[in-house]
Image (cartoon, rainbow, N blue to C red; front, side, top):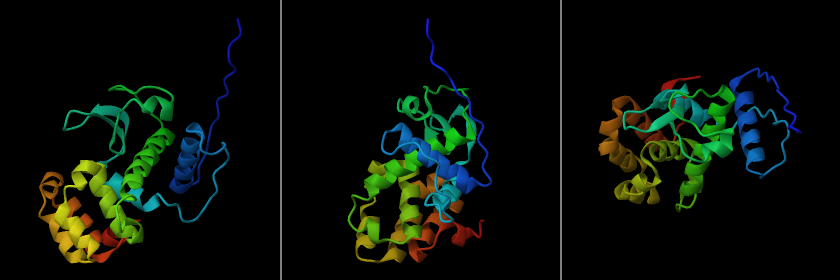
Amino acid sequence: MKTENQITLTLSFSNDRELLEFARAYLLWRTGKVPAAPPSHSPENPYYEIRQQLESFEGRKNVVYVDTNGFPTVGIGHRTVFIDAELVGRALNVGDQITDEEVLTLFVHDVDSVQSLLEKTAGFSSLSEGRKNALIDLAFSMGYSGLKKFENMWAAIERGDFKEAAKEIVNSKWAKDVGERRSSIVARMMEEGITFTHATGAK
């Protein structure tokens, strides 16, 4: 009886950006969009800022746990779903452990999914990185359908009134749910158009 040969690779990364780029390259390879190839070591990784932001707010865990809303969750706020079997090669259950590479693979998938929905919204592509990341943060935590209900905020964004858009964020139920730190930072990002690292001094 023939069995498939298995190859185990030990990968080494000099910093988080290299690891994040590898995760994206791996994800794209697994979904058949590009051939598997070593990632380029760009000094400006497109996921660096949003990862710093969401990891700060959501935390990061390598073991699947049940979140405060009763959902099995792992990595950086990733709620386990059937697609995990395609992304990391297996279904994930409470108590299962995943690698750092798999954490970032799931994270890249989640961010890409949210951003692809937001890009369908008029005006999103013209926003600054900080304002885009503020909206990604909102959609990441409440879902795109929940974010679409922020009609006054969207109207303010459309007319370029980012101060008013920020007020809508601060005065929302979401702000009460996530707490002052997260809501105030996201609101400031929206109002001033700055990134999380600029708003908090994080590195």
